[in-house]
Image 1 (cartoon, rainbow, N blue to C red):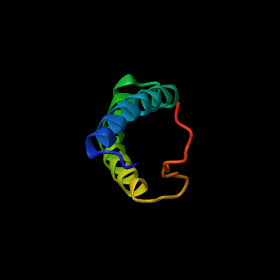
Image 2: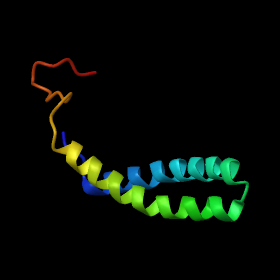
Image 3: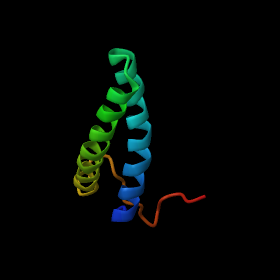
Length: 76
C-alpha cells in the first residue's frame, strides 16, 4: 500500500507545527528572547518541512516492514 503525495504533505504540516512549537519554546528558554525564539522557529519551519517531505517520499518507496495483504489474510 502506497501513500499519496498529498498525505505526506498533510503529515509534514502537522508534524512541523508540533516541532516548530517545540523549537520556539526551547529557543525561548535558552535565549530568553521571544523575538530570537520566533526567528529560529520560523527558519527551521521551512527547512525541516522540506526535509521531512522528501524523507517521507523516500520511505514510501522502501518496502521494509510493509506487508502486502493476500486473499488468505483474516479480515475483520
